[in-house]
Length: 341
Image 1 (cartoon, rainbow, N blue to C red):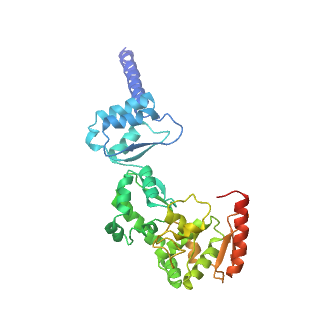
Image 2 (spheres, rainbow, N blue to C red):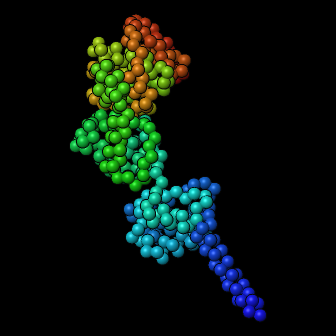
């Protein structure tokens, strides 16, 4: 009789426990995300519990949202909201995300530094990818003292950025980001690259400046060492580089498909038709292929080059100006035939 009585009471208790566990599992441990892929919650300095819940609601299931909201509102988390980028995996429940958010266990951004032409573009890109205000970035990159502290000036600062992919926390401060870029720059300019630059009697920044011109001349990595050799020959003979991309940079119009004679007189230190030597800084953030093309340039006797008339992106090289004029005539004719202004 006692056993039957015990079973009579134990069974409802067991059922209640199963129901409680099921409810808890449903709201706190079942998949939180609506999607079949990883999503991200971004928490910035202005966020509070309410704004975090507004951000997360569109990407979560109703039960997951209820569970997460309960944890956030009833565990004293208002003072423990860490800024950052938090991954929400397909299998994550409310508890998983809550723990990450409570402990600041954010997921880094795989940030690829772009080969942009201007620091305005760099600032805009960083403002999109990180919790850094783009206006603050451009102010820093145009501040002489801050650039000097990083080993550059306001014209050479594009040389700071090496276009690799880096794991960086979304909420990194601007100062820490710039220091990270400086550290990566120092790592990139290892003993071998520094030695090759020294053998060419160029500083790393000068190498980057030349590489930026070469990258604008062609996207063909195989031809870049040849172009580097040609420009280097001009530098060695104190001949103007006469690089059309520097005219585009000086004018500020990168859409130009054709450089006309009257454009060659623009008054700018970047005008390599009027000034000898390298321009005062890079005309873009060059590719690593462009930098290494300078360091591993082909040594030859060419002084001239002209884009091929087949628009393949490659060039005809010439030893003499007379040869160059013939090549230029072919290219000019091809431009006219296509109506390119």
